[in-house]
Image 1 (cartoon, rainbow, N blue to C red):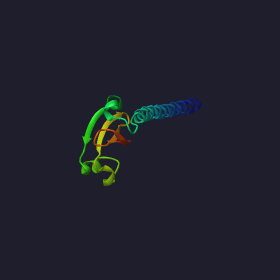
Image 2: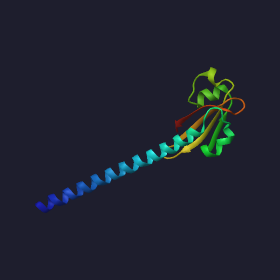
Image 3: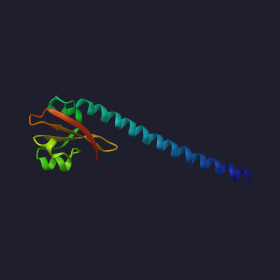
Image 4: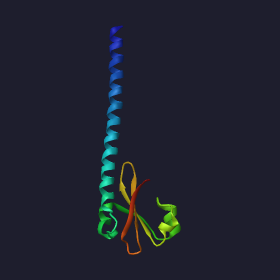
Amino acid sequence: MNEHKLITAVVVLGVLLCLVSAAAGFWLLELRASNRLLDKLALAKPGIRVSQIAERLGLPMREFSNVKDLVEWGNVKDESFCTGKKLFRFYAVTPPCRSIDVYTDANDVIVYATWVQL
């Protein structure tokens, strides 16, 4: 009977260790992705041309210049802010899938940058 309890305890302990290891692995992936995202977002400072940093932000996904599209696809929902602006979306990090939204003026000079969960 003691042998059966010992085997059960070892199996339960093994399952718990596997779950803790998996959780720690996912947490580590999330932390690394968040740090990469913040590093890329720090590049998109207002006053810099988007062309100067575009290669380092990630894979270009979309570019919008229509106010209606900016409001629909972007994080900023204020039409007055979006008037005269462009939105560049870059695929930034995975996993989890996140992108960087860069708002520029008509001359492609950055005015605002943020990130979005895909």
